[in-house]
Length: 362
Image (cartoon, rainbow, N blue to C red; front, side, top):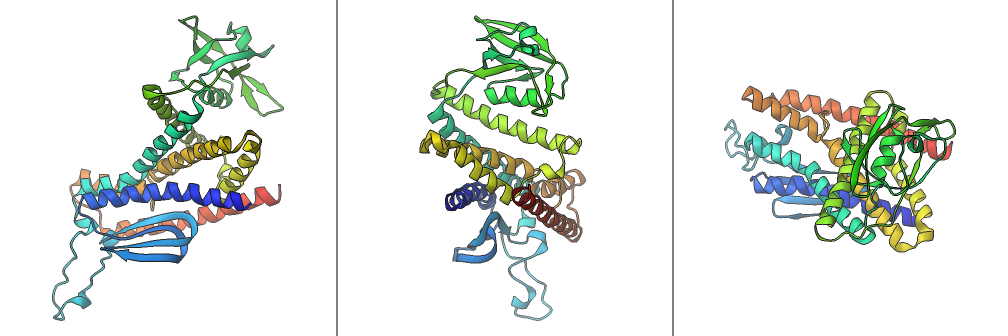
């Protein structure tokens, strides 16, 4: 359990630092004053001030914040600092709301964008050390649609439906969420490309659909352009997984009970470590790095959702400002974000309850 906690803190720490560092660096480039750069939530355990910014490490290793001068209409200097009573308050330099709208958009967008950059850099490590396995058919299952459609061992899947596929996991995921709908498959055999149509078969035992082949193949060593290509493909894969999972949630194919918070993620980390232990420490480390890739992509996309209190919600107000030619009232925007923050906290409590229930009751 101690190892799990350490890994959890390291993964969350790296992912959150990358996110907040994106906000921080782009704010600095645009002349926006950063009042506080904090990692974690809850009580402060380490804090110091350097230059104009206060750096804080908090007790709970989840979340973080980058607080800007004048954000939500709150300034570090107030009218009480004025020498003469009744004198008009002067705003400090570097206020967030005084920056032009595109500078503010870049600053807010940078957090999620840096998560994608982090995911790519981590993927370079995973693919560089473990290589990549192309979706090559290793065997066929008798009585399933793949064999009936004419697919053979050694065929390499290149496209499913309209989606170009590069990784073995992509094929597995697409077949699992197909819902039993026919899928046009493009595959490569002896250097030639062919197409066929298969209808996945439902398994009552596993509660999912199968096409009827097992993908295998020896990992391909990736160097140079191949390393960049397949690292990008790995980020693309997790990107698609996250987007499709959100769509399935909206469509009712997934429920709120399928969501996981920090406790659920920690449980997944613990289970994954136990499963990969027999294969040695390098395998455990690479698996955890790959998990960090997923988490970083997930955090980036979730923060771009156009919901109050998230980066996406702030970006939405700025885009409205671009269209209107003037900003929305700070009071109104602040109220919307406050309501969104309260709703987000309620959702976090709900997810936490679900996580604990799954672990200790089921």
